[in-house]
Length: 262
Image 1 (cartoon, helix red, strand yellow):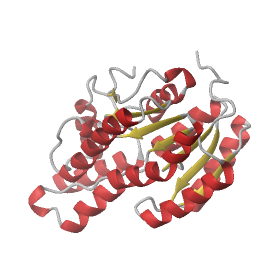
Image 2 (tube, rainbow, N blue to C red):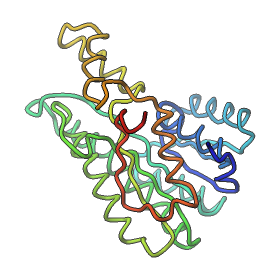
Image 3 (tube, rainbow, N blue to C red):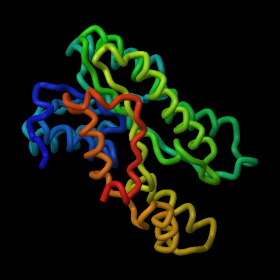
């Protein structure tokens, strides 16, 4: 049973919080009483999400537009946020994305963009927020990685490299802050029903001549029980890691790969 008050009086920053897994995480944390700041690039999507969450859950949900690949902008926006509102209890680094290509056709720009979005943004947002958590003596940081951070997949080498980096960063930072009442964990979903997955399905169909249904079925088979994960399943795992009672879980990379999520 969900403890609907487990995050009462806590505040969370969620990157990529307007849609997909980020939106599901926002809903799960708000349902438990947390106030939210949703961060992302698309103001109208964020504004709609914040308004709907406030109405549905009766919590304070606001948003900030931010390109998490712009380090100076991260420092400015998140720096202003923590100065105005104090240390957040929770940071969820969820923003990410992937482009597929054979390695021999993977250009420098795509490599750099993929690492900036999926790995360097985790560093930048955490670097902006962590000092205030340490000063407050409490914090929960959850990084959304991927099963691509635990094993390899063809044609997404840059994404795999970035998500492996997220898992490594998670484990290293967890050791640094282990005695400061701040935890750092990663959640590693398999193929999940998001806009990114739907775009991948369209690309596979266009490049291979298979139907979108066939491409979706192939990706589902890569998850351990042959189905696509739902964002709410990932969100529930994140919410558990954000709870005050989760202090004993630190430096973990938790796989959400359908069989475990069921």
